[in-house]
Image (cartoon, rainbow, N blue to C red):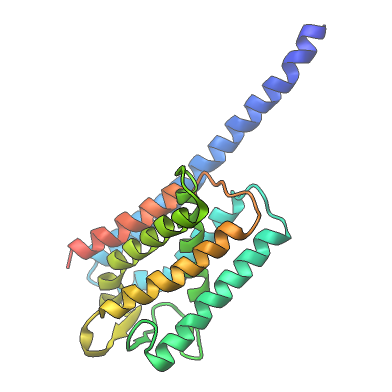
Length: 228
């Protein structure tokens, strides 16, 4: 009897870990289905407009699943989310009105409802990228600042893959149809600030979906860029 009692906690933990792993696999499958469908629709369909209407939904679904697998969902996490989305949205408003941060650009209709000329969902995009890149950099045995730099480079790298696709599908448009170097400098500066904030905010920075989401996004936009 004592032996079976001792085994129960280990068995319960193993079952819990197995159930969690199954949930992760289901989430990965859902995200893969959405992204593969979108990739095929945007890359090979004669009418990509049908698939473009689901871009905001895909972004919200991805962010929602990411946060669902965040172990610590306390007030600090939500504070980080709100501040990051507000900063992301705010810099975009400043960006399109002044051209000082990223260059001269304006948003198209693909990303949905806009306020002050900026899609409301853009803050969620900044949050998703900051969160996934920040968690990936936590695996490196570096200081918090060097991790922030690495995560910033991951964000800028993803933006470099995203830009040609975004222009092609009317996420946004650049003046004279040229993506300026200033855009990447601005992205680096804003991303670094957000990554420093990420590292200084105290919540559990582990997520089994983070690496999968980053790679899925990277391959999605890199692949579409190759199909130009």
